[in-house]
Image 1 (spheres, rainbow, N blue to C red):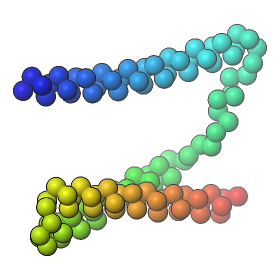
Image 2: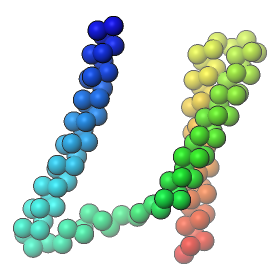
Image 3: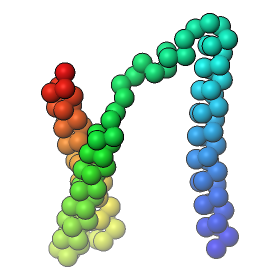
Image 4: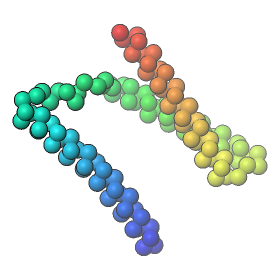
Length: 113
């Protein structure tokens, strides 16, 4: 019981530490740029994704995971071990869903331009 609590605390504190370090470092870099007279928009030169593209990514990932669970259940009934069947199918079909999402987003970007 104590190991579970300790592992959970370590995981969440590590995630918090990484996010905090990233945000504070980014803030210090931007402040240094502003103090030197440079424009802080240098960091915003990357491509921005719209909310619709984010929802499309999540939807196709969820569809892929759902199909992976169904196929994993069929493989489990066919004699494959439960852990192997579900885990492999979830990752395979989730990855396929993300790949389809990538190609759909790329197609939508080409149509916008």
